[in-house]
Image 1 (tube, rainbow, N blue to C red):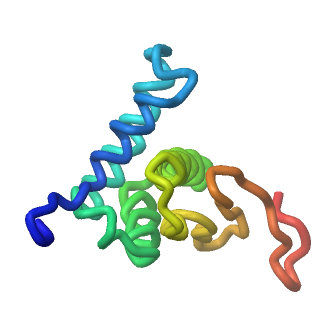
Image 2: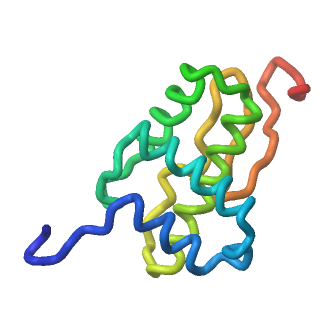
Image 3: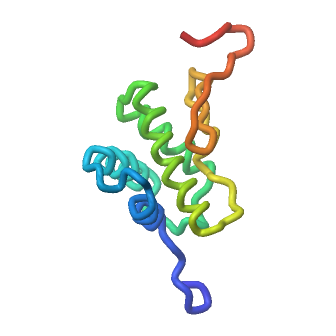
Length: 129
């Protein structure tokens, strides 16, 4: 509570995402979003959205690596979490930067940009394969 006002928690972002997304009625889509987001909450906790930081994004990547997920799976999970948070920030008209945007995955130059993804060249190593 902040001056009698409840701070929205991370789980509110998933709820908002599933309320407004065009594919909200697609059970497979919902399952993928919920699974990815549950991994994030298991890693960093269902903390108030205002307290979520880039450090939490890096902690999520480390947790997924520790759990043995392949780089592609980590990228897909991070992309889902980033899209969920981007939707929440947009729908609540927040000017805040998405803390899950542009989190690098160690050993790769794959970046998530606001729910979109792109390759970047690693200097001195050529293009990733």
